[in-house]
Image (cartoon, rainbow, N blue to C red; front, side):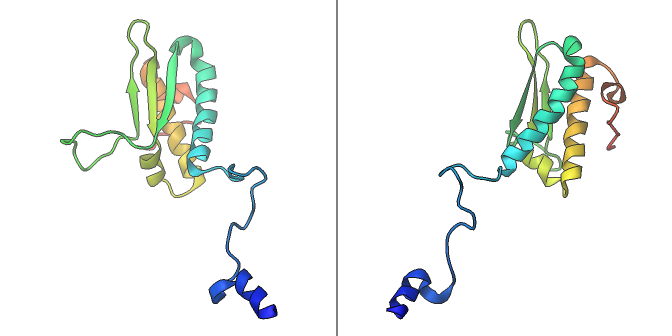
Amino acid sequence: MTEARRLTRDRRGRGQRGPGIVPRDPGVPERPTRRERFDRLVLDIVTEVDARWHRQLGIVEYAVEDTPLLPDDWGEDTVPLSSLIRGAGGDASRLVLFRRPIEHRCETRAELEAMVLTLVVEQVAELLGLPPEDVDPRYTDQG
């Protein structure tokens, strides 16, 4: 009987299988995904910058997409990290950050935070017609 119990628990001798931590709510992961962590980072930075400049900016839609859609004739040397579409008339301006190209260029969490801050500040500065240093004191030219 001991041999039979061992075979049902540890088939093929590879040890126990399954998740190391069982989620409290089935179907809901305990740890946020990379996408969720990136979205949270962007939301934190955008909230700070937008709160400071909301009156001058007007309505701006902020979004995160995984990758940009590039036309077939796009040069292979560069991939955009963000996109800014100015609003016209009653339409809101739209600032989109592209998660995968940004993450690809950053090795640490600090680098990721600095890159997102730089991109948001530069795009908001473009909308306002101001130098990026005036938009946020944390901005440093990544040049």
